[in-house]
Structure formats: C-alpha cells, structure tokens
Image (cartoon, rainbow, N blue to C red; front, side):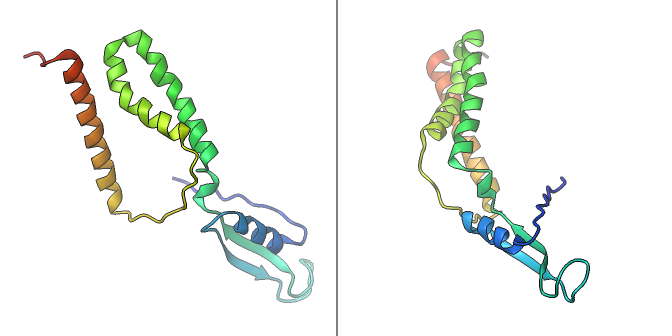
Length: 147
C-alpha cells in the first residue's frame, strides 16, 4: 500500500503553520525542521527550508466522519430488508444495531494506542458475538434447522 505524502508550500512561516496544525490534533508532532545553513538563493542563513510533521489519524476519524459513515452504511442494510424479507432482517439486525449506536454516539473518545497483538483477539470476540446473535435469532424465528 502506498503512502499519501501531501506537500504544503509556504513562503515563510512554514514552521509556525506546522506548529498550528500539530496543536489541533493530539498525538501529532513535528518530525524535522531543516534550516538554511548559509545565505543563498533559498534565503538567509537560519531561515526554514523544510518542515516535516505528522498529523494523527483522528483528523480522518472524527465523530462527524463516524456518523456519516454509519449513516451511509445503514441505507443498504435497511434497504435490503423489504426485498429479501425476514431472513435479511435477522442477518442485518446486529449490523444495523451497531450502526445506530455509532450514529447516535456523540461522545468524543481520546485517542488510545492499542496493542497490535490484541487486535485479532478483539475481532475474534466480535465475530463470535455476532455469529451467536445471528444464529440465536435464526433459531428463535425459524426453529430447528433442516436435516
């Protein structure tokens, strides 16, 4: 997967702009500030040439972005229910419930660094809960399976 590396051009005040952007999002930081070593075509000695900074992922994953994504995903899941009936209502009910909770949630959560090794365990638990809910509802509505 390729990285997105945007480039912002400032005619002076690049360091101040980077400090401003970094102050907006937690866990953001200025990586390097490269200054001009001597007077020359690029400017006077000590003037800033390049500022590299990193903005946290929170810029993309804001409460508004979460709600918009949830609202966009609700449409296809709810829209499929009249077409396919009760079986789709059961299958989509867990997903719809999670999306409604995300859509209604207005709490700002602090950014947390999670352990990478815990991610597969979290996904496994979520999948197990989802499948138990799906097959439990299926059993409740349709009774014992065929065969």
